[in-house]
Amino acid sequence: MAVEVTKVGEVAGGRVETYWYLVGKRLRKHKLAMLSLFVLILIILACIVGPYLSPYHMAELGSTGEVMQPPSHAHLLGTDELGRDVLTRLFYGGRISLLVGFSSVFSALVVGIIIGAYAGYYGGILDTLLMRFTDIMFSIPVMPLLIVLSRVIPGSGVWKIVVVIAIFGWMTDARIIRGMFLSLRENEYVEAARAIGVSNNRIIWRHILPNSLAPIIVSATLGVGGNIIYEAALSYLGFGVMPPTPSWGNMLQNAEYAMAIAPWLVWSPGLAMFITVLAFNYLGDGLRDAMDPRLYR
Amino acid sequence: MRNYLIRRILQMIPLFIGVALVTFAVLSLVGDPFAQMAINPRIKPEDIARLRHTWGFDLPWYLRFFKWFFSMLTGNWGVSIFAGGKLVTELVGRAIQYTLRFSIATLIFSFIIAVPIGIYSALHQYTFFDYFSTFFAFFGMSMPTFWFGFILMMIFGLKLNWLPIGGVMTPGVETAPFWVRFLDQAKYMILPVIVLSLFEMGSWMRYARSSMLEVVRQDYVRTARAKGLPERTVIFKHALRNALIPIVTLLGLSLPAIISGATITETVFGIPGMGRLTVDAMLSNDYPVAMVCLLLESALLIVGNLIADLLYAVVDPRIRYS
Image 1 (cartoon, rainbow over the protein chains, first blue to last red):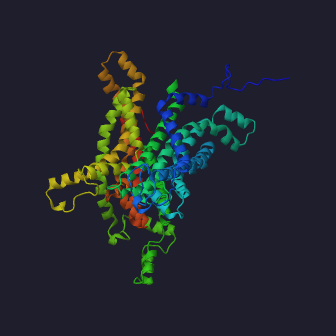
Image 2: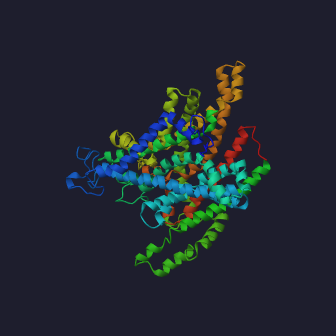
Image 3: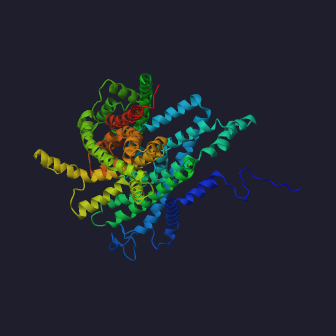
């Protein structure tokens, strides 16, 4: 005999009106956030596909006549001081900058969630120790230490920059998660889970964490934009992603000296970075509005 | 209140020591600043060994830390390892002088412009002005400072030739009369202050707007309107005063930025301020200078947090600490 199972939260029309469904619905109404999402998808696609469509390679040097040429049909955004095609390098640079942005936020998030979750769930001495450590990390001037760490950690790879940015990026996440855990652990469903003998780890990761992700998603979205700028600033100072690998930041480092004669070298990487960061900020703002239940009372 | 203050100040001490320890540990990763000297055949190995001993580089980093920490506590901030053995206080003092000039101008400029705009756009939510100022705020917060600096330099420095593109004063102007000197240095401040302000303005505007939006939805504002008070009185006496509370407390949190200096902007415009001094000292492991710079900033961060909390209680009588 067939048994009809109705899922919790399912309404008569057959559509599940979960929290995330509502968030998506609200977000779709936020025009600027949707536009930003569209622009971001476009930029990400361009960075993935672009290099395959370009007739040039990012490290392909031009002949003497091709050095520092202004935008033309052959080179849509001109060429740099070594005769390399700027547009092609912009695509590759975008890959690197976005990769650094996403993966540094992700790594920081993992650290922040682990520290915040254990501190908030267990409380007591563990909480005190972890949170005092968070306070210390919070009180350290970030920019100078970012610079020094990226200089002393060996290697010139992209992953070094990701690690360095993540080291100073997890504290806000940890505090937010801890706050969520402090309030959520008192809920009935946690008590119920405990009563039927669910292990602490399972309660933390399967019961509480999914319910505390909303504020973290906002801070992560804003964080991607912020970390792209951090990478660019480090690269500009010469401590970020090392040439010949292009990133939007180190393309600007080279451009600084060419400013007077080749302004197109300044415009394109900066504009790409600015639009990307702006889109992340708008998207984060839209998500915040969509996830804040206070606004929809 | 008094107990609260004492407790907070006592909590600061371990925090401060922790910060100093972590910072020093990272700094020690830079390694021995005298290693390069060994390349020079004219410098005797004995001399290098003597220098190493003087600065504690023959000790493990934590012993070097304690040696430095206790001498700092007794007020002896020492001399720079490089920079011709100049006093740390002298180096820091000169750099702060430059940094303060830019940061205070930035704070005043951005605060005066951004807060009224934020308040106004909250009172006219969803109008064109509101959308425009919100866009401007996001624009400022998303702009990479050094790139914005380049663009201003290209337009106002190279193309129009109106303003100098870097430095702090025209060489040779030191002997000129006061007003000439003042105008000359003011000219060098315009571009960096615009760059620094754009970002600051964005966040001040967002804070002012959201704080005012929060307040105008409150019941007491509705009550004030309902009893027939003129709109001006409602806005200025009932709403604005309360909206300013979180904004004023934020001033406490911007304290460290006033002293620390913006490394990136200082590099772009060639300003010899605290940001550059800190980073240059760190990169050469000139730890007496670097530690004073870093701890100054951390101390202001910690104290700034406390001031923000205290200001909160001062401007809002509903808040009482115990």
